[in-house]
Image 1: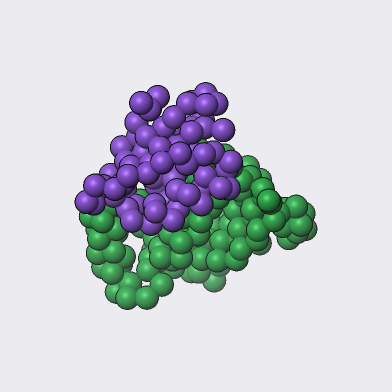
Image 2 (image 1 turned 90 degrees about the vertical axis):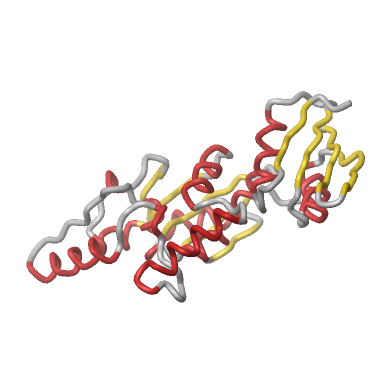
Length: 74
Length: 162
């Protein structure tokens, strides 16, 4: 169960990443964020962002158009 | 892993400014310290809405009057680099961007500010365009010369020129 859910469906690059970064600022280390996106580039961008920032991408799901990422704040 | 980025924005074309801000915002969202140097026509991106360039002497005033007509101030009405068609192309493109969920330039600037992106402006183009510090938005932290940019760029791990 995630500590926070961020709905970025319909938003396009770079907005989901920007919104996720803003959300992460107010979260504590070890908490989980569930990110919902429809922009396909997130498949590349969310893992890349996690690598760059040191946050951990623990899992991801895809239901048709909708992508879900579970990211743990480092 | 480098953590500083410096970008020079030398254009006010909607398409190129969009590309530049997409990159700066992604960098800032990735935890990088980002600064943007606005120079040449890029100054128009941080020009305050309603700012009127001033000229001294007849020819100078003709040039600034022309700029007042051709460059409505504010980042919400930037022209396209091609197919602008006196603003019609830009208007259509802004509508299209909105319909597809892509942020507008003012929205991206607001995000950049929120993420701590620093704005600096180049002095020479401001003098040429008849603009003063108060004609630029408050977020611009300094009006500088080339040596200040060199200092910024030498500290940066990524430098880009748009």
